[in-house]
Length: 100
Image (cartoon, rainbow, N blue to C red; front, side, top):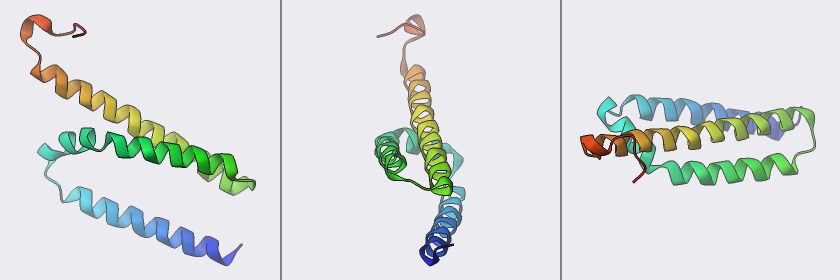
């Protein structure tokens, strides 16, 4: 294995740990607004993951990059679902379920 792969894997594991610690400290009432507010950032991450997947030529790197595209897609779709749920709460009772 290439030595830089170990460094990249170490940075990835560290980022996962720090991200988990940060998100676990956020009150649950703020999770929904934070997720919908960062949906644009998830879109940028998806574009980066697709760009990365298009440039890789090795088997393991290709599997990891396809996984990144999949997870980034889940983030974007989840953000839109949560945003739709938030907007549904603010619609008047007579207009629920209608496209406005």
